[in-house]
Length: 384
Image: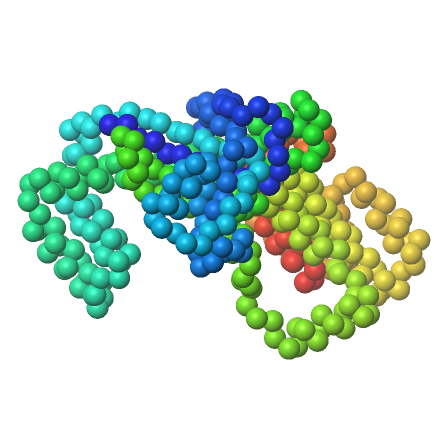
């Protein structure tokens, strides 16, 4: 049995290379690497078909023009609009699956009943509560013939493995960014940039069994990126609007710590993980310095005294967070919030210092964790 998962993305820029396959070796686990075959094409189109022939319509199909035209003719679609895609990437993941007795053994009756329940939930089958749902699913399962049970087991095994292959979408992004960076370096093309699932508005994952379409999954990253023509934040209230207008007129100074954290999250969304960690770390350094200055100013210290005091810990962040913060606020970050200190100290040692002095590239999950921890530390310090 041949399983296939197909990832596809239109890039927001042109890759000026010949169309064709480009194998990229990338790591899929700490101990395993895999070759991802990226197919580059500039012959893809997007056709908008519903509700009208509008580019703003969220309903569209992507493919080569001849295939799209056949679809339009066969389905008698009266309104449509073609739009040429920029560089288009397709990646096929293929695997031969030979079913063994071991495969069937792990698919118990309980597993199949749970799968039936999941289907009933998706289809909004009429049930009153969870016990009613379990009863209905069990009744359906008990009506299965031997052949139907075997078919259900095969479907479960195939679906499970296809979904596991679909999760290779994450290392696929690593391969895609390796491809982009190597191209940028080779051709000195600084208009291109590395991508994230969010900036690419998700990735379509099509699943096939023995060449026949099986299912599709949309890996979305952040959902708002998929609905760019719709509002996704809750409505802003009148007080916030008034505050916003006042700040615009009065040249309101955004707190630098908040500005740095927002910038860090924006950089992380664009895959700029090194810069994101540097900015979030800087936010904490600013927060600690500002808190010490605030307390010393209130105590009547001169600017010269403040500068001299801070200069003594200019290259010793631990002492500034421990001794000096404690002397001026009565609280030490390492002592009074040891959990968050341990986390940020780890991030500084593992990433912040090495980023500044090496080519270390953190991954997305490590970056998000670091930003969250630095922000928590900033909030703690600013509340003192």
